[in-house]
Length: 88
Image (cartoon, rainbow, N blue to C red):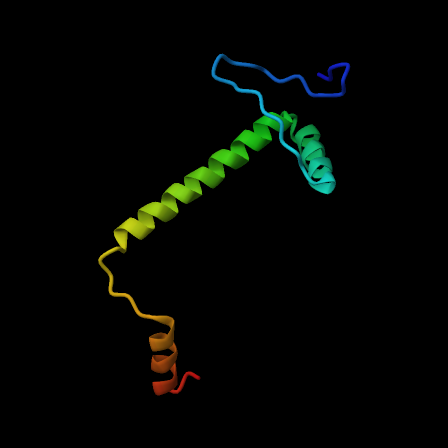
C-alpha cells in the first residue's frame, strides 16, 4: 500500500526500527521494481539482504577461526615458491 508521501507502508512489529537509507538512484529503481515483482516490501528485501550479508560475515569469521593454526606464508615467499617451481 502506498502512503500519501509515496512511501511504502510496511508491516511494523514491536521489534522493527525505522531508518533512513540513501540508495543510488538506479539501485533504488531496481529495488522498487523487484519489490513490486515479488509482491514484497522494499523493507523486506533490504532486511533479507542485510541478514544474508551478516550471515556471510559470520561464516567468514568461522572459517578464519578454523584456519588459525595453519601455517602462514608471506606474499614474497609465495612468489619465490612459484618461481622455484616454474609457475612464474
